[in-house]
Amino acid sequence: MANVLGEENVSLDQLKKKMRDFAEQRGWQPYHTPRNLLLALVGEMGELSEIFQWKGEVERGLPNWKEEEKVHLGEELSDVLLYLIQLSDSCGIDLGQVALRKLQLNAFKYPAHK
Image 1 (cartoon, rainbow, N blue to C red):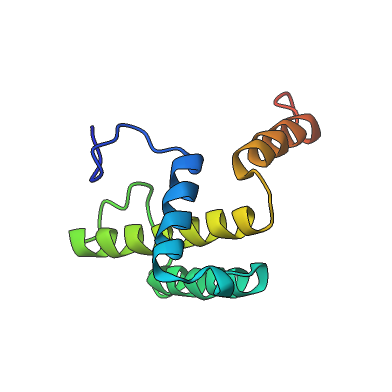
Image 2: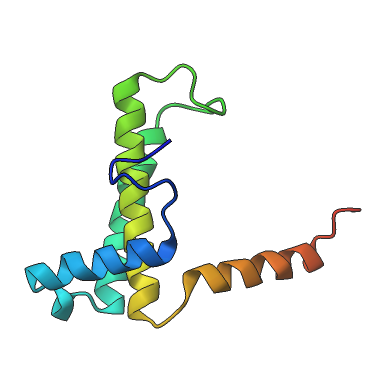
């Protein structure tokens, strides 16, 4: 299924470029320091946490949630993802590569047979 931008799959690199372009067009680069991006990410994590704050445990797939709640959740998840991508870019970290490496390390640390 195509997304709102007409693309089948979106890569971290595509999002990184779109976020760079977005910030550049608005002259925001001087403010997108690692510290500022981290603080913005923490703020967005707080907003994401608020969505779940009084719901107790929820089922996978959120079958009892209203559509507008799911839309709001998607928006907050997107904010977190986009700030994380910007933070990693600002720090010169290839998030996709380090995530793959971390999965390999975790597989070694927590073997499937245990």
